[in-house]
Image (cartoon, rainbow, N blue to C red; front, side, top):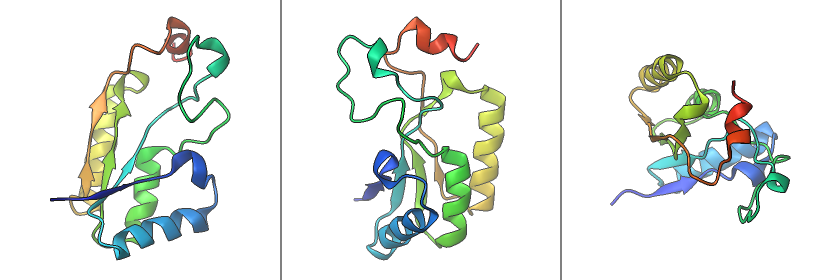
Length: 130
């Protein structure tokens, strides 16, 4: 069995020391991977009828590929997993190149989970990417 730690996106904030401490602690505790959630833009809960998520438009989400580059430099063996990368919010070719680069430079430590998005997102959400 393989066990992972979920990166606390909304709780950890922008403090590099907290990010480093979390990743190194996860590795020291023997976790196999760190799972990172993805949102390019925040979710505006005022535009949703029944918002029940623990985050909103004001919460910070670290960009997964940049975060993985940083984490790779401060860890030795823990793997990095996207859960899930929202492909509809990104250019597919660029995602492929970024993922391949992270995987090569980390010695094969990337596990890429991708998806298109859930039905809770409205047309207005997608309009922000056009």
